[in-house]
Amino acid sequence: MPEQQDIRRKFASEHINNAVFYVPFAYLYQVRLGTPWKFLSWLFIYLMPCAFFGWMANCSGISVGAWLYALNFGCLALAIVTLYELGYIFNDTFAARREPMPSIRLYEINADYFYARTSLVVAVRLIIAAAALWLFVHIGLRFSPEELAPYLMRTLDSVLIIIPIFAVYNYWRGKWNVLLYPLLLFSRYLPFLLPYECSACHAVLLFMCVPCLSAIERFSMPKHRFPLVRHIIPSEESKTMFRVCYYIVLCAALAGLVYFKFLCSYKVLIPFVLLLLYRLCVAVLTRYHHPKNYLNG
Image 1 (tube, helix red, strand yellow):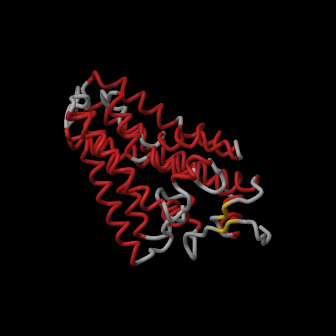
Image 2: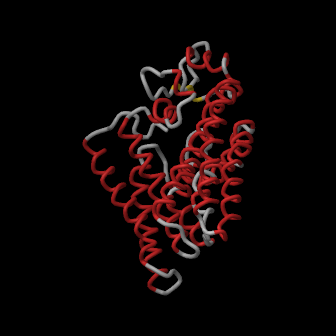
């Protein structure tokens, strides 16, 4: 792509290996995050609440053992990330070419490689995701209680629907496509609840835990310029303290709901408290040190 002053260059890594197009989690690590610290942070923020509320859903009705839950979780994580990264790849290539001021995350040599091998990349990604989902369903049907079979199939559907949601998001460019972002983001969280007898409460709590915060931050980005949210988050640097305040407010609100018996147990506070402590640690750390790629989303 020709040099332009208005192009937002956001290279997360100094070198990007073309193997990232095929290997699950590699694209996320090298192209979107760029450092081990950010990758570990992403894993904690994403997988911890999914594992916690998935286990709560599992324990609230017909349940499976810890080993089967772990296998279910691993298969779903592999399939979801593999497909979600495919959406990232199309976002950073074909979708970016239709924007006047795109965020450029791939070097020209990487983009050229992908354009020349698009079909192969898509095929490999779909095969990996299909294998993970087949293993999820096969193990589930063999070892889960028979009553959970319909839940396995709805989980399968929820993972596959990530593809059309991301396709619409990539095709619909412009200011207002950000309205689809909360749905797109939550599509990678919700499947972890669905193999079990989850309630609407589980889904709402999981959404509030991380996706809601990420959606609010998305509405504050300069490209989208939603005035109300920009008053709450006026700059990228203000996100650090906003995240702390978000979890303080949620922890207080949830504690109140439990106290007045609107929620059944203080256990629901655990992931919110862990994320609050994490955000407090990050706020302290970034006062004295600015990690590479911090706030470079």
